[in-house]
Amino acid sequence: MVPLLLVLLLALLLFGAGFAVKALWWIAVIVLVLWLLGFVMRPSGSSGRWYRW
Picture (cartoon, rainbow, N blue to C red):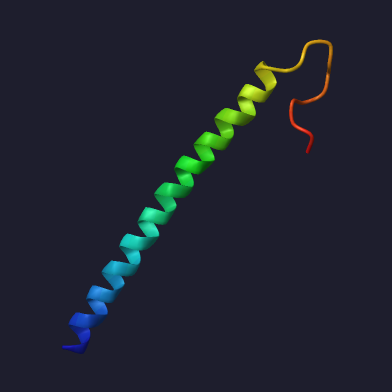
């Protein structure tokens, strides 16, 4: 019974980690798109970035 519970716990942990990694990938893609849009949509007449940091 204990090995079965350990396997189920491991499967649950791996499923949670896989979901977290997939969510982090989507967040990384969104941040990359926003960063690239910052170079395209610069204020005219300014050589700086559109964000302050």
